[in-house]
Length: 506
Image (tube, rainbow, N blue to C red; front, side):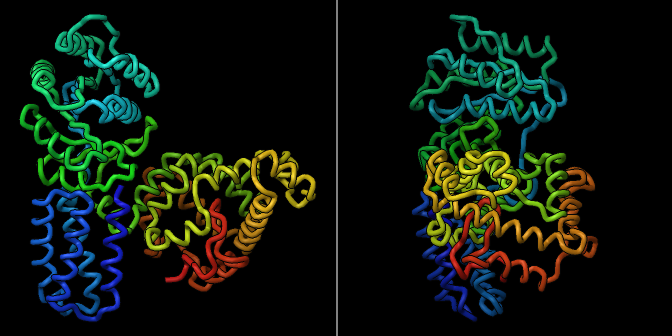
């Protein structure tokens, strides 16, 4: 969603990087370009004015003008301004769950904003937190809206209120409240009706439902791709409903991102969640610092680790670690890596969380690194026999042609995959020397305990602090040189990057 803004800001900061000193004229020029970048991203004009005024005041201070690396100071000031615009530092807001269940969560928004889907995603998130959840559709106008919510409830592992034909929305709300109390539900999610545009009838109905249910949370669901219309919608709903937070859907789309940057500042309401895919698990807790980092091209390593922890299969990982420690790496193991990558959001999703990726987008495109490439590689491996996956060296030219035909690719692509596998296998054999110290560290960091107390996450925090021996710079450079053989480092599932690009170098 923020790609265009990220590209524009990155170009501004790149021009500053070579300067040893910044004059007030330089600062004014930079702020003018940042102002244009924010306006082009569809950020509301009053929000941009406020942002630029504060950033200019901070950037013209003596500490920045005389700084050894003024460009870094300007980036930091921009980051701090974005964080403040998005809600400030600290823990994400999350949901305010009542101590006296059932907690009522009221979903509001225009038709087509993704309100019903978001209700299902939220239910799944709460079910994973061991909450007993009841979903109730109050949308009596949209065809099959109630059936859609019931289907989503089933997918989420929650319950849905039985449908009674002809019942009005306020009466459904009363019935849902009664059922939630009598049947001991922790959470009741009410999905209200929407319209294609704001009208008095919809607002009056939503207001009546809010009075009946007295919700702990009233969440406005807005489509991030609608730009400033989403901001106007939020203001209109806020005037009539006791809104407590915002949910921005389609945050993975190609919109300009201005709505996300404007809605918090204009309404004063916290953004609590981002909808990042159509899948039922595609709901992220909103964190201002992490989103600001993404905008500035710093990636989001925390989200990457969280995704890895969520998809982590300890038994499989330990079995693979034992094989790798012996220098074993066959095509079945490579296919498992590709599968894990898909579960974690695919190549494009993972690359977007890595710092600095925006600056090498051209190289990535030239190397044809994409989710389609991963799918083709998985198809090639699945077209092989079990023996061929274990021992790819036995593949003759005729078998390669049949595998290529069976997976819908050229023979050259089959050969590239086999070459890539060979390079990875050689690298793992090298790492296995010396008793597999590198793999023992990896297993210790990620395997024991996963992301729980004393497990992978805790160990990641202590890296570099003397508690866990890490490979030396010489070992890292040796590994990089080995991986670079054949034109660019070969990372699991990535194929070859252009020659000269080395992520191990500072």
